[in-house]
Image (cartoon, rainbow, N blue to C red; front, side, top):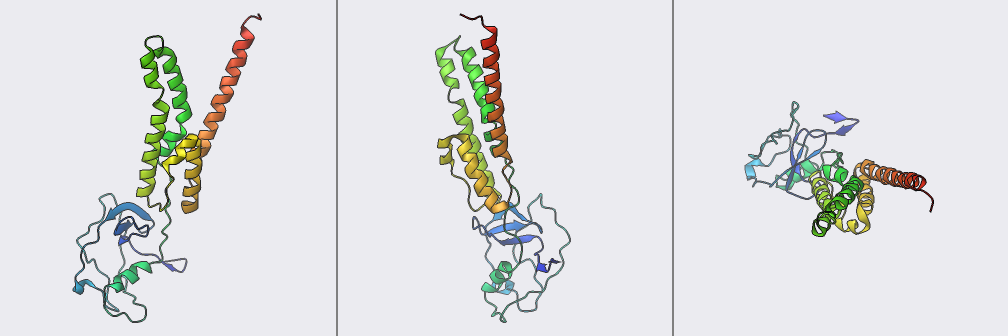
Length: 227
């Protein structure tokens, strides 16, 4: 299939461009998160010049993959080909399909961006818990930190499954959720061109909660009688 003068490969298993596994499923439009180990290839499975490409392994498509009709494609072997196993690798590497990931939305990123709300909830919980037990209040203190670590870990795993070659390090959490989200935005935008929404949502929450806190303090100070 030709698209804008470029050859686009039909859906199938191809060499993982990210290098996380042997094979990765190409949906016909983008690389997916499905990976598999490469099965052994028999000499008879190696395509010859001018032959029609066919499935050479027992690998089956992922269960949720939507497969459009696959047109037959003639095997193109540059410089003649010698029938070696390198022919298949050359065919796969020359399918001019985009290898950049297109998805960036993960639950972990949005959970991390909501950390300011978790801080507010924890503060309210500590205020109530301290009236019952100091130990109960202390047990709530690390909640925002644990939330941040769990959210960042889930985000890194999802980005890796989506095909990102570089993912942000969780050590950025030493600078707080904002530091991690800035590093994540830089990495994701460099590879996909998108992914800044969780960062701006986090910044908006911080600004909104800070403004609300200052306004509340001003109102309380105005209502208190002057000493």
